[in-house]
Length: 96
Image (cartoon, rainbow, N blue to C red; front, top):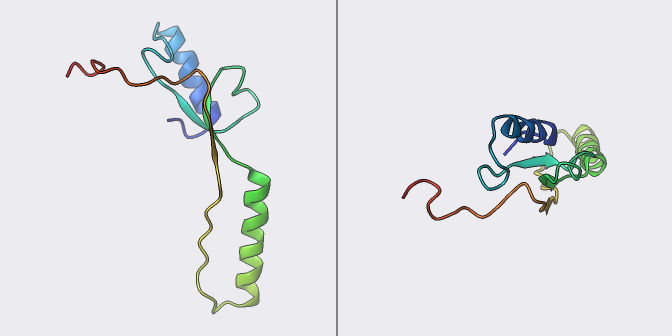
C-alpha cells in the first residue's frame, strides 16, 4: 500500500518499467483518491479532506473553549474504491 496515491502511482510506473504486471504480479493500493487515480486504474482508499479539516477545527475549538474536557477521538469514514490495480492473491504466490 502506498502512503498516498502519488506514491502508489509511482509504484505502478516503476513496476511497468521493471516488467512487473499490475495486478497479476503486484497489487497496488493508494490512499486519497487523487484526480489521476482513475487514469491509472488505482484501487484507493477515498478520503474527504474538507470534512476531515472541518471536524479537526471543531475539535480544536471545543478543546480551546474547555481545556479540561475529555480527549476527543475522531474516526472519519473512508470508502475503498476498487479499480484494476489489485487482484486476489493466488494460492501459489509465495510458493507454499
